[in-house]
Length: 226
Image: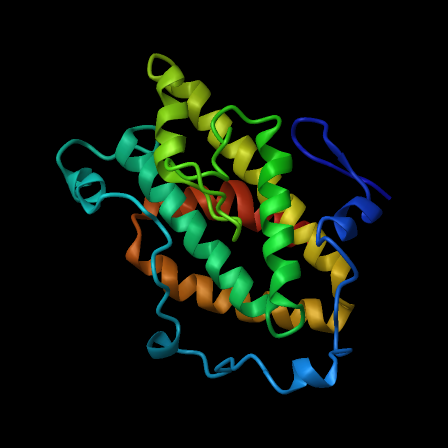
């Protein structure tokens, strides 16, 4: 059965598995791979859920966020949304490494961004940094997002709608790909750990941003994938 996103993009199961770039490795590691296990702390708590920012932005761009009334559609709101999105991607990758080869995870994250960007102006070329280097880990270049968002400066309603649709589509592809690549029990374990760490990490963000990401995007996707 195919899944259809908000833009009508059809995504079938074969496509979602192929987006990993090869067969998903689950408990079938070679002896060489077994010699290099990924260490993951299973204890949940603030002390082990510190997430490093993946943004390459000049810190000044973030420190200005209280200079004017905060709105999601403003530059400061867009910056905070995508810093949060990139941190969520980092948590997702960390939890997936318990089950899937890291190269396959990076490939899935990058391909899902490329696929979404084909139909999203605000995500156009955001898989490349401003120096022209490919962001192979699937994180989003925020400076490119800001440049793309200029076209919406006179239409606040459109930019919020574009953000919602683009980020919904991106994360839907990712979560459906993960569900297709893991068995039911492993997906459930992944989801529990992902949500726990996300909930701790997002406490450092403005409520408007957290509510936007959770209510309009992640909660809908996760509820539909359980």
